[in-house]
Every structure is written in C-alpha cells, then in structure tokens.
Amino acid sequence: TEEGEFYLDSLAVSNQYRGKGIASKLLDAAISRARELGLPAVGLLCDKGNPKAERLYTKVGFQYVNDTTWGGHAMKHLQYKL
Image (cartoon, rainbow, N blue to C red):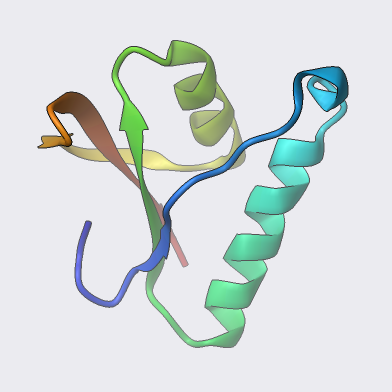
C-alpha cells in the first residue's frame, strides 16, 4: 500500500450474513472515516485468488493500482481515491 492511505487490513462477513450488503456498508464506513481524517485514499490488498472480493471492491469504487505479494500470496493493491 502507499504512505498516507487509510489501510484496510481485513474485511470479513459471516457466511450467514453474506449477500445482505453488510460488506458494502463496512467499506462505506471506512471510506467516510478516511474522508473525515483528510486522507487521500483508502487502500487494501485483495488476494488474486478471490475474484468475488475483487468484484465487491470494484463495485464500491476501488481501482487497481498494482500487483504485489504478501505472505507468499499474489495480491492486487486496490485503492479508493477520495
């Protein structure tokens, strides 16, 4: 991720509550908080093996920045510009 980003380390919703918009609301809350703090962007790393999560992030407005690895996993750095 980049210096100055509001970094989201992880986001999880229990199986029984998926598909109800909870993850989108959590992302919206993080974006709002970053905006309150005056930060330029919200960033996260999305595992390349998790296309469902990537679809969620791009639907909310996150954009691809670059590829990276973390803990031996191929990841995509995604960012929501404020």
